[in-house]
Length: 417
Ligand SMILES: *Cc1c(COP(=O)(O)O)cnc(C)c1O
Image 1: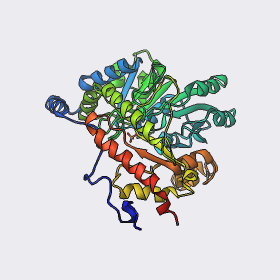
Image 2 (image 1 turned 180 degrees about the horizontal axis):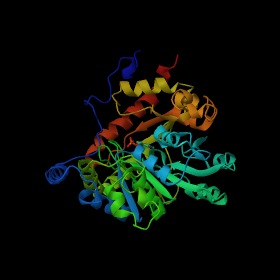
Image 3 (image 1 turned 135 degrees about the horizontal axis):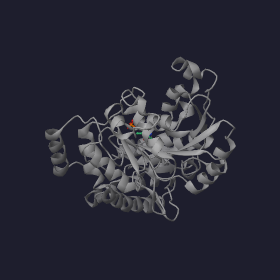
Image 4 (image 1 turned 60 degrees about the vertical axis):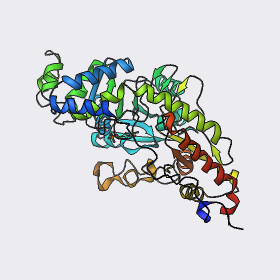
């Protein structure tokens, strides 16, 4: 008997050509915003025009005092770390499971990243953080992976107990919150990416948030030299002497990117409401299936659902390898199901195993190996990530993805052996 599974010659559930998901959603209003900016100015040297409007809108949205736009999230992280005074001799506890750019800017500052394992949500585990604190530890960086907020209460307890600085990489988590408190407002400062697929997108861009005036001034000095520093640093500030050159880096955002992000920010909450509905719908239906564990949110927690990270449980399907399960879904036409590649436990990357080829100063400081972070590695291996559509019109597509998951789990026996 032949199998109905597409991988074994049957008909696929989804025949609609891809892509099935694209981000950000741009419409005529976005185009008008871009054209308007194009006609007005495409180079802004100070906190004026669309840069000022977007920074103010980000401050309002998050309820913080300062926002500084940057050319990327990586740049925002670099400036945030520099402005937080992190440098040689400092240890910074970071998630082992994150996108590598959470950590790489620290290597350019001479600080030592200390990786820590995650809990079952994929976010930093406060118990492992506590184990890795030494007298040189200065800060802890939290990523809210795939837009699901980390367990901030437990993390803050450890961080406060040891008087450490809390910094956030909220690049997945625009608008996510815990009891109404938004990601990016929990620590001394936060950095966000606004790269293409991020919940708030500028195409390319990023920003730093902080309530701390000194961090703000130092972010400007780090990477927004000359006009911004001259305009915004108080003239009696000790750094004012350096206003013209700053530290010599320029990480300004492109005004067209800022125009896109300002347009998108006005709709972010609408996107997140739609995503929450789809995520609930998917979680309810997929978590019933053997082999699939859907993420659960504690009461009061709202995710931005940058992705829906499902965990594959091979033991519930007689040991069927995740690779085979994934192949079967792809064959059914689920082209948006993703096994994340570059967002992976950092100990699996050569840069964190043998950094000395690129960063000679780290020869004896970083030498991670596979198997150092068992939770992160298991979660990474078993993650099947789905996009979370925000539009009601996409519900039939969502239904066909669910149908494909049902079909593969119902017929998994044919894939074994
Ligand atoms: C995307 C991302 C970054 C890097 O942001 P870019 O804008 O691509 O430079 C950093 N950290 C995390 C967690 C990200 O997802």
